Image (cartoon, rainbow, N blue to C red; front, side):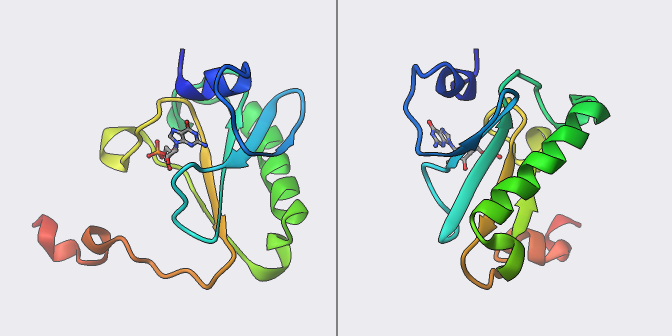
Length: 118
Ligand code: 5GP
């Protein structure tokens, strides 16, 4: 069972933003922006690569609903999913990071200098 399933089950508390029968949005415990929300399907899918496109259709609508709920539809936001080891995924339960509340920089140093990789 993933830590996010424990949050879904109420075994671990979260600062909830929105939920419906299939999806849950809550604040990240270690925010990287003034607004940093995690959006998950309640059912465990390991990662983006493994989720069915029909689930993603519904998840897309839910993500937009969360963004609108927070006013980020007007100001803009960044949406990220880390997929697998090289993507930096730590929790193996599909989730999207919804980041906003400020003009964000692309501050991932190692990603900004691709020469480091070659
Ligand atoms: P990943 O690196 O897998 O894309 O992101 C996992 C995210 O989950 C991290 O941003 C981390 O701060 C967040 N996180 C890990 N454990 C918890 C928790 O128990 N509660 C909340 N709200 N966020 C968590």
